[in-house]
Image (cartoon, rainbow, N blue to C red):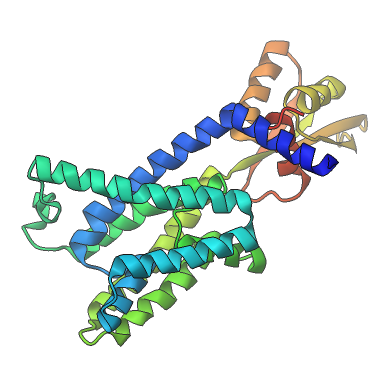
Length: 316
């Protein structure tokens, strides 16, 4: 009973916190960005890039089953896997993002109809023909950005991203490489089509590969942390600020100055970019004499994430 009460309290605190509203808005707006990539770049190009939509198109051409039915079935199966293998939080968020994509696409279709917009003629510099490379590059950059943002808050655009997240979790492969491998397999299914085009398949494979590279870049940039090392006679005051105000851990290392031989203490901690900026501002305000070095860290596992969430999200 105690564990049930604790889970209920955590859930209630999460929905009461500002994080719930923030992530809800992020997911909604980010899926709007993903819908732009699909509606204005992927669909007009006719490319089959590694995705559930691309796989559904191939199956439709082979069986005649409507694409909507195939997509719904595949996504439903993948969402079940998300719940079982990744977690309820990821599964719930992905269900919402998958549901909100269609309304965004419908909205863009309404806008096109109202203002007589032709997505295939939206970019006049293509001279009225389909420039596959332009559409592919635009689609990859826009979609990769939305994928990185969603992965950052433990969500996804659904479909292929779920497979990539599963591979990333259990095989410890970079999320971009996971997307590339899964997408490449789907791209190759296009060879089973009666009218398959080697040229378009190769473009799709290259697009899937670049998608993984760009996704890794965006994800690493959004996931960047700062590893700071501070040497100061007021190390105790700095440590208290990090642990009590920023709610982060800090390690102390005993050093000895190379020139003077005097003993010194170094404070080492991992902070977010925002927390790092706050710490630097606080050090300046307090006029604390110190020597600081800082480097980027792109992956953090273990207690760092759990402590942050416990302190800041659940109010404990």
